[in-house]
Image (cartoon, rainbow, N blue to C red; front, side, top):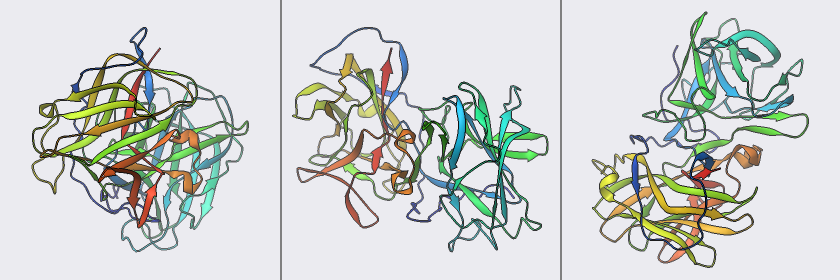
Length: 392
């Protein structure tokens, strides 16, 4: 059985909405007038923001499938725990069945080949009989030690005698039309969901992005902790309606050269206004991305989501400890829309696995508020699909 490609992975509040967006490569761009500080070199060294995009959630059945998460360790140390996202119960046929089987998880080294497959050499193993926790925190025996800068694999198998009848799924972020790289935050080599096609061959399942967290004995952690997609609750960017990410910078100053947002143009030909401002409203820079650079959706029921990038007229410094807003607006008569991804903080994913400096907001009738989803208003656990390009 191949992975269940349905985007209806609803469980524990996961988005059950489908989306036919086509997230084409982030080539849309614009520039404009500016005010504020600028400085220095312009060589890009990273991103600041959620830097994650997704259209929904997607599962991979573990039994009879074997799957894995390939990742590059950013830390040297001994693993104390791994936090996962499983679909273990619920009325959704094809996501789980029977007893759930016996889930075997191994931490394996990379084989060193150009394909970067699991080597079969297990550094640690965990067995979960009849898994019933959707967000289990597991412990390997023995406790594996990772080295920064090396690739590793979390490999999932089902040892039940009848894995086609008794199984669970691992859950992932899903993109209907994958990019290369899949995510702005990671290269495909350094972070990917993989499927075992034959006993000796694996392939990257490039529609999926893993959801997991690695915790180390010394307190360090890393991973990808966005675990829900609010595609069913997009907000309009038009006239008095707008969206923004509000954030307070931590971890030192950030020198940035561009800002990107994943959104859809629904109607009209007005340009998208991008404004970076301080909390008091003082404008750091404002400009536009031409509407012509953002593909018009064929219909409002089939929005075409894509990355749009605004290039600052000069390098901008986001000061540590300062609060900013990254606003996106459009004239009346033109409609864009955007939606957030949800941080896994309520499921105990650590702040190192998502953008913890801010949250998404929308403006309606002149008032800014946090997102509305699943009957809850003014939520602060969602981020726009956005990022800044950070330079050395």
